[in-house]
Length: 621
Image (cartoon, rainbow, N blue to C red; front, side):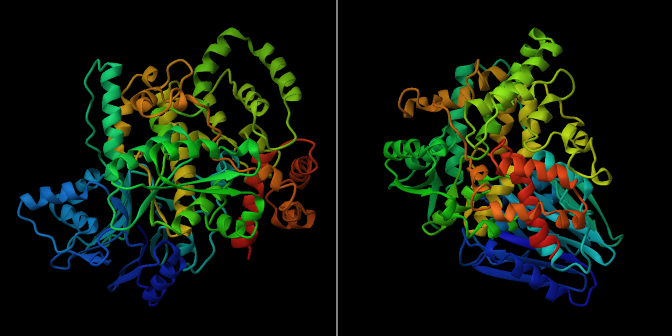
């Protein structure tokens, strides 16, 4: 696991700039560093040594030095690919997955990118072809940002590396601003900066050094069709084996590994598979909260006892994070409003003190249809057929009033209110569901007219239907998984110099479940049905059917206590007038209503707080 950087430019200080880019992400790779530079192309990387500790130094070259690569990630099928190449007579000088990518590229060209099972962002400079190729993995587990300027082309794992070496400060992107306040994150291809982009998952850039132009291409995957008429029992057996195989493939490491264990379905199954494969007790890690409505540590203890792991549990409250919120929030380099990042960082930091690699349950909900919001897809159709729009509006106003909460509890009142307010009689209602911050219909009351783009999310609807669970999962894969979940895990784990691996994010497993009937994934109201059935024999009866709260953090309470003073500074009229982005009175009312306990506006206020922290901590300093 590493961080990579690159510059294509004739600027005289290119090597100095590359060194600065590397230094900005030293947390991603404290074990090693490397730089390559010729008259125009520069590549750099920081390395967290996981595989081939002694001979995996980068940048790495092919035999005649015409191809050079810097690589961030892990290729889980590299041993299989290496054996296939060796059968053709190809020899290797290291045991690293990096060298396998080079040899594959020499043999198959860019077609080889689709052969890789793993998480990656890498750049290859082919001096014979006079081209640079920059690729990102299927799900977007590893980040890649880029910008084309008058003096060159820049790319990096983290935004801070690019922004730190530009000769100018990019302006705030209007599209990103609107996307952020609706979704609470900024999905690819946008970043908070105008003209700075994220490379889309499963894409690669081809930069032609002759023409000084670049184009982006989708990586072609050779997915197989599953047999027609596959029965549930047959599919269940395949799911069992594919999940186990994926977990095992992600335990390859030359350093100690562990497993995150929240007590939910996904992390419990991953931890079980790791424990079954290990000859000695594995290390499992979880966090709990002093606020009992958020705490589920009892479930993780039960699973730890079942699989006989060495379990490490950390019970936290605001005081455990108060001194580190700045470091966590600002490390995202752009506004990021998922409050569970705070918990993710804390468990990653605690875990990194004992192991260098941790397996996670991330992606299980997308791959197997596990989110509560998938219920709404089924419910919306049935509800709108039975209840006319006028009656619904009466119900909505009534329930909104009587179910309103004043604290950050996220209990049944909160969930029912959210459900009723998500019902839509026209349009793509699923995009309302995934807008965790402001709805586009209300955002115009907060963002000033000259910055407000009411239809910004519409471009993500092109080619993405929103009628079935399969549709919802595909939308989540391209938006919330890439833009939120994987960003959260990557930045918080890398800030702690910990590598996280997600066995459910296996493209062949995704391809398999994506061809199954929706009823295999959700039977009635039973989510992740086939996954639970595939592994139920290993757990106490009905354990996998227990509800899970998720990885929430009670930031709504904290905004009224320890963070209150700072939050109120962000609604100072003089500050807002100078900033010129928001309507001051609307923002002040939203924040004060929350702070005073008149209404619970946790998600919106936390998104606002994180934006202003980024603005003052990075953009306007």
